Image 1 (cartoon, rainbow, N blue to C red):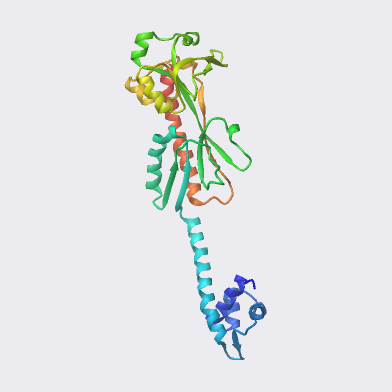
Image 2: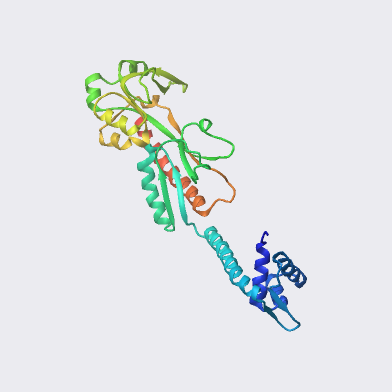
Length: 312
């Protein structure tokens, strides 16, 4: 037979309160409903659980056995309910996050601040760079870069964090050896370290003086879809690379990279915060979203202000 948990709750409350009347009062139910539910429970089991008389109730042998088990079930049920309610009040639990590997350093620093602020939250961070199925793989939040049209679907909520400016950079040694390109056309005479998986038919997206965007053909001996690899090659003097400014501003400040044609560099792309649903967000997810919006936009403003010095 199927057991109705509500009947178990009513049965245990009758025993604990000592009467149908007291149980009905505690549960906020009519006494007739309590009596009917107990009768339904007994009929379903095919055995009497409670001995009734005008003055008090008592358990039968079967009722005593049934109460010992049902009381444990009801206690676990109520404990689970309390645990869920507590989670709604205090952010806690494991937060599963996926993000591009290129954001690993900056994101890692922010996460340390987040963990200090919310000591009851644990974070599992995946920096594999692949577009995971958030629902199927049970991730809470993703940070993604690029056009949302490439991976957006109706089940996902996307919040724009910031636009990431890009910059063309080369090492001082490379520019001393091959010269500094003075305009976009001169870039065709230079080697590039290419972001991608192939050096064949590689292009670079740039901005003309009128604000329009163009793609120019570039060539080079190395292509990699990992910005740290590109940065290492640039430091080694293997060519020019187009890199998000947030990933190389420190090298520029230290003089390890020289910025080239800053006015020709468009935004590299948009950084998005992605999560499966807006409804019934767990507190751990809600506070992480708020934290990212607050801190990453602040980080973006710092990048924009710093980037303006290159353009001036």
